[in-house]
Amino acid sequence: MLKAYTKFASANWQQLLFGALLMALSSFGQTYFVSVSGSYFRDAFNLTDGGLGATYAAGTFASALTLTWAGRLIDYTSVRRFTWAVALLLATACLLVAISANFVMLAVAFCFLRLGGQGLMTHTALTATARAFPQDAGKALGVIALGLSVAQGLFPIAGLTMMEHLGWRTAWGINAVLVIGGVALALVFLPRQGDRPIRSRKDRSEGTGSVSPAVWRDSRLLLTLPAILAGPFIVTGFFFHQARLAEQKGWDLATVAASFAVFAIVQAIASVVVGPVIDKVGPRRLLPFFLLPQALAMLLLGYISAPWIAPVYMLLMATSMALASTLATALWVDLFGPLELARVRSFVEAGTVLASGASPIIMGLLIDAGVSLESQALGCFAYALVASMMASTVKRTRSTEL
Image (cartoon, rainbow, N blue to C red; front, side, top):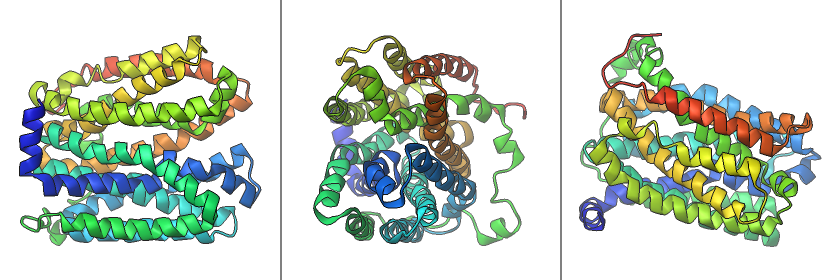
């Protein structure tokens, strides 16, 4: 396996490095990074936990409404131009955070952060990579996922250090510069050969560029979505409320923080290991099983409060998330083909952003209503099992529209 990866990476290192750098840069719009600034936002804008969660959710939902349209535009221009547009959007979002004068401006900044970061930057990396390697999508996506894993291990610490020494506004201004510089570096490695639009402007003007009912009503997509969206919902919700989880479990925050290193390391390893397996076995065969580690994590979290559960829970969550990040895009190529990839991915990515935006506020409201995170974990366990059973019925051939 290692030899196959080495040979593949050495032959295609430029395209893969481009994707990995974009995955890392998407961190500036990912919940795990934005949440590091949470206490600064609450103090600066006099927000409660619920108020900050609602502000974040509002920005997230607004970005999801735009993503289904914006994600398809990669079909009508070169990857290079599209990447620059996304970079400018994300950098602008970072600057908006830095100059926000009230929570309304912060909500707008959150919208652009989520759209440019978790939404379009990730979408660009995964779509460009899967198109470049349709026969080796599993390996290729596993390699570029390492970019996000490395960022998860480094960016929160770096961001927190900058905010402590320079102030949070200055730190977010620097983040904008890092986005532009990072994208400029990434584009050095993007091969120019073959970087052309796959659809014409005429297609868009005639309406053929939209997600047709035949796509979003296809039962293959609808049966798969509950499983694909489970990870973003569960992981984002528990990460966002990690301080409350530590309080309910009797853990100190240092234990939780150290467990994030476990998450990053395991996700990196699992992303590499699972790539060749997906290429060999096929994404559809793995689809009913990728949520099982996450389901086990929720079961353990629901019943056990010992400190050792923290790293074990992170390990299991990271395994499922690594499987999902590589499996999903390979699955869309398998089910719908490379030509439909951007349209399907933008639709699914909008759902992902919605799920990750909804979970902090839903879980927060449940906490306010007296439902502990332990009880919520057991609910997530049951959901993961049901979603996995639904996914097991997906067939490759085109299904009847629902």
